Amino acid sequence: MRDFGYKADELFCESVSVRKLAERYSTPLYVYSRKTFLEHYGKLQAAFRSVKPLICYSVKANSNLSVLKTLVRAGAGLDIVSGGELFKALRAGVPSRKIVYASVGKRADEIEYAMRGNILLFNVESLSELEAINMIAGRMRRRQAVAIRVNPDVKAKTHRYITTGHRQDKFGIDIDRARDIFLNRAEYTNLDICGIHMHIGSQILDARPFVRAVEKVTNLVQRMKSRGVGIRWLNVGGGLGIIYSGESPQTAQGYAKAILPFLKKLNVRIILEPGRFIAGNAGILVTKVLYIKETPGKNFAIVDAAMSDLLRPSLYEAYHEIVPVSSRSYGRSKRIRRYDIVGPVCESGDFLGRDRRFIGLKEGDLLAVMSAGAYGYSMSSNYNSRPRPAEVMVTGRRARLIRRRETYKDLIRSELS
Ligand SMILES: *Cc1c(COP(=O)(O)O)cnc(C)c1O
Image 1 (tube, rainbow, N blue to C red):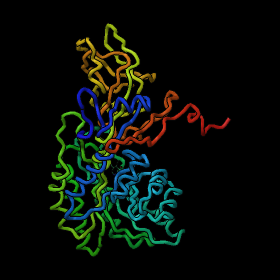
Image 2 (cartoon, helix red, strand yellow; image 1 turned 60 degrees about the vertical axis):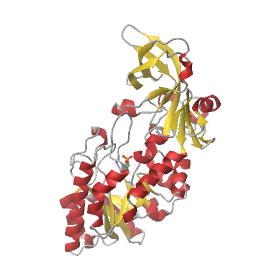
Image 3 (tube, rainbow, N blue to C red; image 1 turned 60 degrees about the horizontal axis):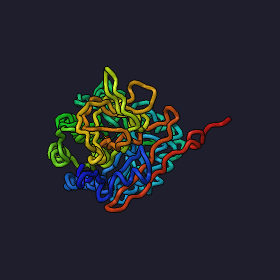
Image 4 (cartoon, rainbow, N blue to C red; image 1 turned 180 degrees about the vertical axis):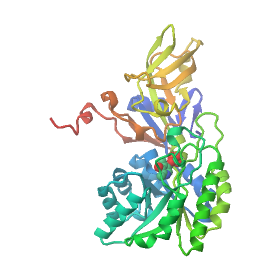
């Protein structure tokens, strides 16, 4: 997280003091570095320069409009998984020919919305969906381009909730069935079945599962070519892992080096769908210690952020580094203690970190939960009727509020009584 670091004793995001942001906008607060989003996007672009891919940032990782606009202005397309994400993508001003749409459960109204929006490709996840899209395209008197999402049946070493390319996962269509679809493509009179899509999971640290999967889909493209089926798009998905704490993921360069030899053999256009790789280390969640509670069993630092603001620790037992915003606040006490960093939500699973060592932690201290830029705010909820936090985008010395904190009124906005 190069754009988040200490100057003297204080944590900065680019050239802005995180403590000052917390004082100005209160906590809990998401703080993003614009530079990081753009640098990570640029790294993938550079690594894959030789095939000039369409990089479709995965909206679900962080769907704030300002984040989307930042990437869209840099040339990114967007990978969406719902009608709501399409709405946001269009609001962010992305050219519709740079939108790809995956999801195992696209509703008819979402399919129509995306067709009217002229998106580039549907990534189709089942035979039934293929038939539904064919029918809707017929009704709308158009020929719709689609890619088949293949489930390449590889095991990626990651949390079981975020593997998506194994045959027991709900995603995609197995290779044999995908082959049959391509060979019988004439049956789908309103479809142009012209692409293959894969996405094998998230937070994958090692290039090998990617290579195995890419090898399988490359073979499929070549076998189809020899049978006279032209495939124009190959979408290799996202899934690149990042550093939360001491991991050593493949770099963008390493990833490109591992899969480019396969991609270059084909005469197809390449799509990438990075989410976490771009957004994960571009954001932090700032929170304040409300109470220190020492019990015979454990010490707790109860903070004002909770699982409703950052779900990853509760959902996946994910590890986020948690650091003091101001290390001066250590004061005179040099006592090292271990704390569970927990939120106010009424669930024992509501924690942000467990058994974390701090020196002289005290009530009122500010903490930063690192690497919270992806699947942070976008997974947040109003559970326990907690208004959601604000979000701030830092650019150099400037900070801009890009989402105001929710109010109590926001909590009942859509209720009817
Ligand atoms: C979530 C998702 C991505 C992004 O995954 P990351 O691990 O964040 O890179 C890409 N493609 C599809 C289809 C997804 O569902």
